[in-house]
Length: 165
Image (cartoon, rainbow, N blue to C red; front, side):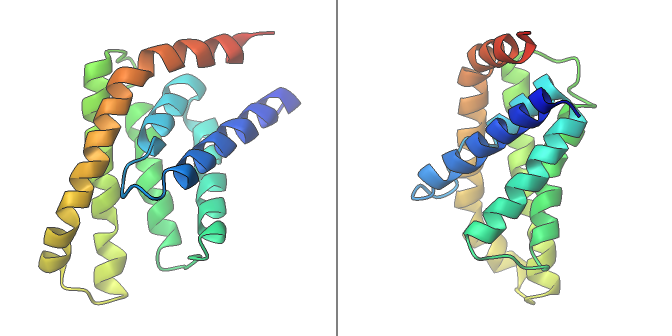
């Protein structure tokens, strides 16, 4: 991998990590889904996977929540975005459709946590789902709006910076 690609991956990972920390006081409102969608569409699957792996490691270490119960599920939850956007949504550039895909990924990310909560913590899923539902809608709503509004201009700028020689 070229130094330029390593630098781009590092900068984009920092942006992903920092925005979450800046917005941590707002429950489930972040640019995370939007940014991973953007990275998937611009950088492709491999580079986005590297960004997600580093991001999940940083997030778990920084938040002191590094747990083998949750780490793999967090990684899988975020990794579903490049899987979906580099395959099913690969040729789609319509912001509205991409925003709907971001909503889908937001719910999938939330639902993936049902597994460790049920298996490891033995939490009853129905009350957990009901209690988590407002937060799932917050994540889905923020993902929809940020992808709808920010995808075209930020993609143009990222492509401009990324493709410069």
